[in-house]
Image (cartoon, rainbow, N blue to C red):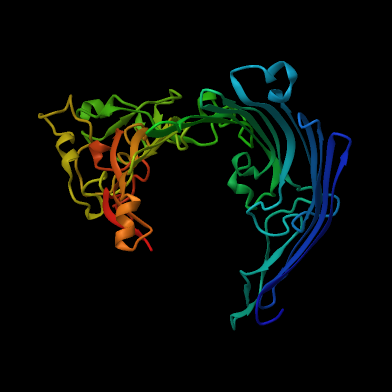
Length: 490
């Protein structure tokens, strides 16, 4: 290798566009090759492939397109190195049809659909997983003189059949522009991901003493919809528009490496890939008698005031085998609203955002009070205290000693991070042109704006932001910002 890193990329191809009567044909074909050489004695990264598309349009009304990619990855062995990924899409502009041209509702109406396969060769694992590897390490000591000899050990088991992760993507959509100034876009989608890289660590005991090979065994289905609606008015003294965006998506693990005999509540298959797992809290221990009559809690030696958990498998022991799904780490529903308005020289802009169906695990310093010298906050008043609030407490007994039982992932700390937030608000005034000409300016605008002005959520109780719950604890706090300014144009 050399003393510096460099990349060489080559791209070339052909393009064609032509007309066949009232129809249009367009096509592209390209070749790409790149090589990234690292400084020092390192193996260069190399990629190679071809990609192209062909589009045919009939009377500006019917369209069909075929696209493909034929890519190679150095991380796969011979026979699996190259993958072919085709895609087919079509569209129908109904507003160009004679039976809709006289319709007084539509300015534009289009239906579209696509079906295609994509591939992922950047697996995020060690390079060349199809090869057997040995590493230096360990070694041995011989004789009375304690002489040493270098050793070697076998790396992760190879898999010569490892190949591309793939996804079958389906999308059906419609675009509408109405004559009453209403625009609507709606999409249904499904992403069926398969051949996802997994290992057998979940099904083979660690006593085997070997890192198992990477395999294409995972399957996940993502599906949902996206919608956009916009209404605008550009006539008269008032000009305004309001746009709403809504997206909903869920995912489900269809296949993964799992041990046999797991109860349904512990199986990852059939549940969300973004699920949060933990124990189900059912209150706090009242006294020693309550502890003695309850399942054995193995995470820590418990005391009155500690968290009590449900024994899901009825083995009279609380451990990791009692974990269940207690939330979802990714929002399932996202909402955005953008509003603009103008009247004479005044203008107004507002942005509202929202997310729903997301759970956060409260594990930061403002929640785990007195742990690691953390300060006590107002929620300390809700902590369990013998003879005072045993029946109403919502927080375990206070202690400065680390407690693995109380601060384990559980429904006690899993909180809804749903929110509806007034993210941005701005009001401006532009001076009339007659006034600006006397000042030697081409434009002058005075404005006031604010960011993060208000939020409806369940995190306000803990003085945390639902978007970034750890802000202000592990980094800079989320702040409410006010600005005033002047824009000048000369």
